[in-house]
Image (cartoon, rainbow, N blue to C red; front, top):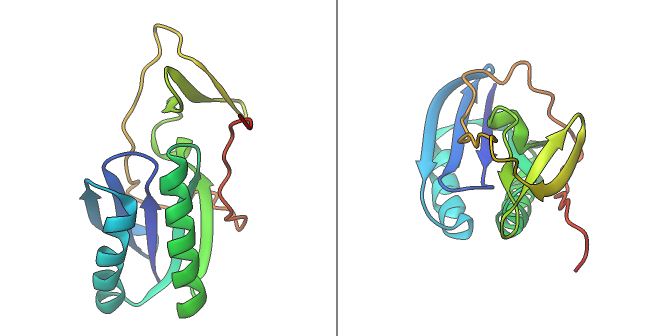
Length: 150
């Protein structure tokens, strides 16, 4: 089975093509999610027989998450594909993720909080895993924003 993993919460955007849970093709794209996803997915949908879409729905760039959700949900509905989500900490070794100003999203046990970084904190880049077999994707695909209302 062919599935796609989309990580839009930071630059570069990461898109992985997986066959039977193994990474077979990786895309790293610089730019805006709204500009990049339509062009790339036109190519992907004509090249691969995609059965499932996976994306990161929290935390990170809210606009990128919203754009990715609307775009991927539309593709999933129109092409009758499975659609799943997961938080971004799965793909950066549970490292803090940039939030607002000097604050970061930090995963503490299973809760996500927004706080300043401790000075010895390490920020890791996002990476596509070589296998998605043991990743606990969720069927709750709505974006999760994790920030209080202003």
